[in-house]
Image (tube, rainbow, N blue to C red; front, side, top):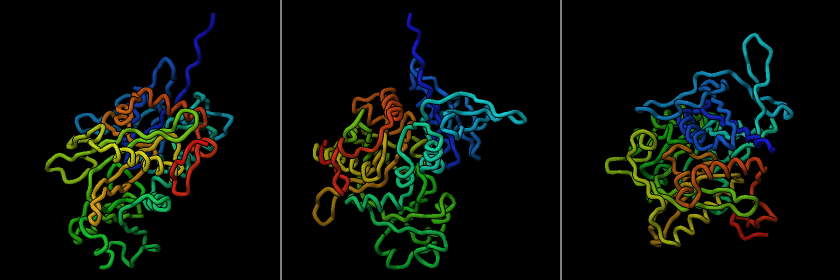
Length: 392
């Protein structure tokens, strides 16, 4: 009689030291619920705001009455650095370190600094553990808005006008809380002042009067010392998911979706995204076939240009060129670990594309276990601008 097959042991890591701690917890709650207990043995690992790793019970990972979840309690554990260990060790005070469990694959459902920026990816690489999502470089480059824009521009993908403000030693002007008159005239108003390495609209201010600018820079700099000032790009907010193809081949793009703000909502900030529910989401978006094809093509190009792996969500502004009247498509940002909350766009667009939430999680775990790499020859030929030219 054949025994029951061993389940794949998945460590779902969430929380973390970034300002997006709570959203990571909510995303993880959905991922944990989607992992089939018949196939997976799940090891929930929460990281506290101060960086402690805890074996978590996987409960209370949702926004409840406006209260955001947080990792606070659990058994202290640490990742085993030796690749031969492939697991987690208990860290009991006053006792020898003991093995808790081996891990087959890690699903780092982490957003922001110390999670989506290449740091935990480097730790997992050193530990010899396969993991879901992009590698060190793609994670770091996609997290940093300055370098995302540089790489996408080099690939011929349009970006909105912007200025980067660094710390005092590398500021673009003597005082990083001001912009010279030429920059102000070029950017116009409104502008969005953002931390360069953060997400979920945390630390972002919409500036409609230059008198607001110093305070907006201080708000962003409290999250990240490097600040990006972006000109407003008029247009519809469109998002598209990208998913690595099973096995090899060019990445797949989902149907695009649109975010529409309800009357009285100024812009898509943190509260609107996660608490107030003041948006309507059209999945799929009301677009022409030509617009859909273009958005999907640019999404795949952005994914390849940044050397992404596994998954990504590409966010756009779709407007009209004032000179030609033609569509103007601008990439706003690329997320290598997009939200996985019940209302997050990434699982919604894939559900509309025929991939259910559990199937989506299965594909990501299977891809990580298979050592899925960015698409290169001979699976596909990629032009210098990041376009997929065809299978090799």
